[in-house]
Length: 228
Image (tube, rainbow, N blue to C red; front, side, top):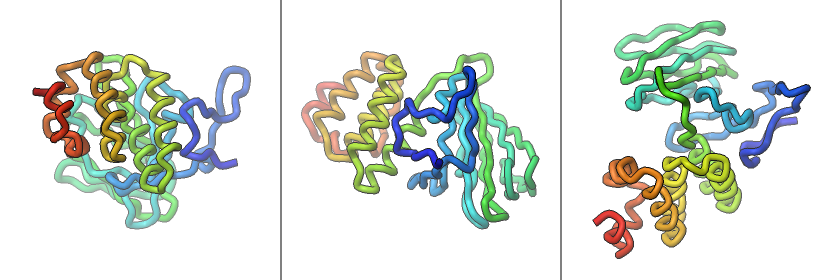
């Protein structure tokens, strides 16, 4: 059985005596538009809370680590589980066959391209000295993919379930507001922005200032009420 990415956050793999078994081959990849890469959504499916953990998969020439830097202080460990990838870290590029581990510190540019069909790269990340927090970027990305497929109700269900599981997460409320903004649902977006502001006003104000996802809301009088 392949695990559908559209499933709500409560979906789990088969459980045996309190532990879980899940094959990477059972997970349906979801193509993320902004990252231009295919995600295997491990954190969501396992309900894993100790660190950020996901996997990327792709054919030859496709991204298996989207280009980015971790400005938040996260450091990441990548493991080439299958296939082969070309990693770029900073200004250097390295060949990474199956079994290779690549450890990247924060604020260092990283990316990887598959050199073989069916390449899979596992990614684990966290911030030293700080407990892991679910910010829901992967929930948002999957909901965005569903919205782009013409399945907004499924996308909203993913985000709603995520917020129920992480009631104190300003980031999930904020990201869901962005999702509703892009979908043209201003009333829902403003309600979620109010919730996010109650949870962490400083962070929300910082991110909302230049976030293009919220541009459809900026001429609304409610925007001025919230942000001045």
